Length: 222
Image (cartoon, rainbow, N blue to C red; front, top):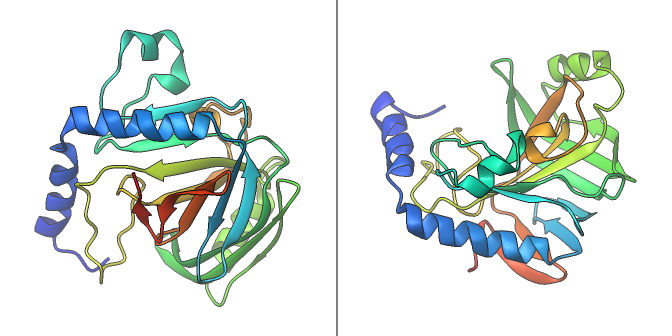
């Protein structure tokens, strides 16, 4: 992945040692914006352009701590990941429309290059890549119904997780990262219990909520 053990350790521990009160405040701000929104659009100069509805969906925050309120809401709200720093939700089922382009994706230690996913009415209708798609496609084809559903949106908010620019490492929590996924989304408050699920990272992308920019070219704007 283009990182030494020391560099990887620094990425992890810098993220763990984030200013937690500030991270919590950022999480609440992003949650408020998403909770009050109706539509999200994600775009990127590489060709990504996808919209989805989010009205009346539960928005969850991983900010490194669990309050009594979090614990009272059950499994999906009572999770902590370290390094922390994610705001996520399950969008309205059947509403995702558009294309997602993923420049590099690792699957079973193999690299997929130039992956393009097309969604219509919330379902994956086309999957192509420049190279390396065969192992992933074989597992996808063998999975049960529900695998094709666009099921979650995850936004990174941790300002202390810095990925080395020329490495192939990628992660959920860096501030400005956008991740989308298909299949199982129970962890994000969704109803899809399919054993299969997979995520796709969209670094450097722009995200708008009801036309207002929240992330711009991979940078959290608030």
